[in-house]
Image: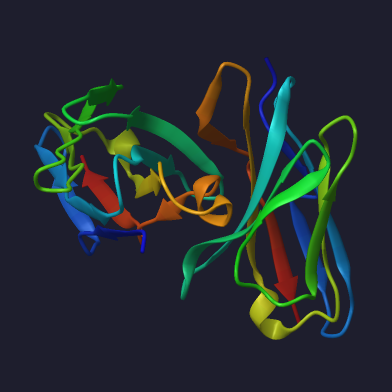
Length: 117
Length: 113
């Protein structure tokens, strides 16, 4: 079946530190992969996405590369800021399967990031 | 272009009552999906509507239902509320030139007492 596994949080970093949040997936074929971010009291915001192997998604200094060989889509940022404190969700959209699976997103459990000044 | 809007933002109900939540998608988007977010279960898919038809459905009991109108606005209804229905309910829309990406609203926080 389809599933996403994220590293357990919480993750606590100092400002300007390097960030990695690991994400691996299980799916048939070539799913589309996403990172969403959720700030306190808000809904999910799309951070970046990649739709085929070796694609790199990037936005606001965050990057993630679609690695088919390792079924991974790790999120990275070279220098985090206090304003990056939020919960980050990795998600996939299947490319194959029955109609009941194609339209939906499968999410990881989320990783809480706290950045201290 | 305005984003996805959800009303109300907060709701408090008691067990046994029913509730209706509303979602207005981004203009031009014809697909609306609903998700339930809880600390214990994370984000779980409820259902997806496209052109007024339910296209996909998650593993939720029949107490959870939805519909979509001709203007793509969607409502979801939960009948006979249980304490475990307390959650953030998120609506997402997709469409236009990108049928891959779902854009989420701010959610409706439902508390069942």
